[in-house]
Amino acid sequence: DVLMEFNGYKLDELGFCELLGRRLHFAAARDLCAVGEKVPVRVWREGRDELELEHVLHPARYLVPRGQFDVRPRFFICGGLVFQPLSHEYLQGWSANDRPPHLQTLFLGGHLTPDKTEAVMLSQVLADEANAGYDSGWVGAPIVQAVNGEAIRGLADLVSKVRAARKRQGGGFLIFDVLMSSGPYKVALPLNGLDEADMRICSLYGVPRCCCSPHFVEEAQS
Image (cartoon, rainbow, N blue to C red; front, side, top):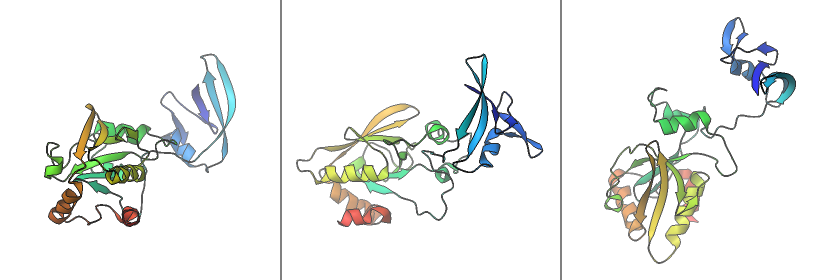
């Protein structure tokens, strides 16, 4: 379907309309309506028929949240890997044209689903022998897809999966599947010695001893 008219405003080929004495994108007309409101729309279907329909405006379901005010940032550190949710505020560190393409794509086109409640990125690496070989500082902010082969829904899910893996006996590795513009790759941390590595990192970099923001401290102590 091609949207021809929204709530009485005729749209041009770029989706703009005459509104409030100016030429504005129809999103401005949408924003004048309330959530749950029913608005009339006219669409062009299959290149020949114009249909009058009624559309219910649902709340925005962005994967990357916009306008977070008075919100304490969430983060989780494991073996020097710093994980945090992607947000609009984080992206504002760049101009729109300079943002990493894989992050900007999620910002513009990512939507919430039952299996994905937020995008979790590896925001930086605090160098330690536990993560040797993965560089240090900002490493491109790859998006975490899975932990030990299990897809993650959000940061809380990642924290839960990492802590469950660390409680298991027998050593092995924590393997994070990550993705960025250049493609997918894996980051592996040895489970043996990870507790000692976290202690070193806390001491050297001055991060909280719990290696997380207050949102996850209760889980850590339970």
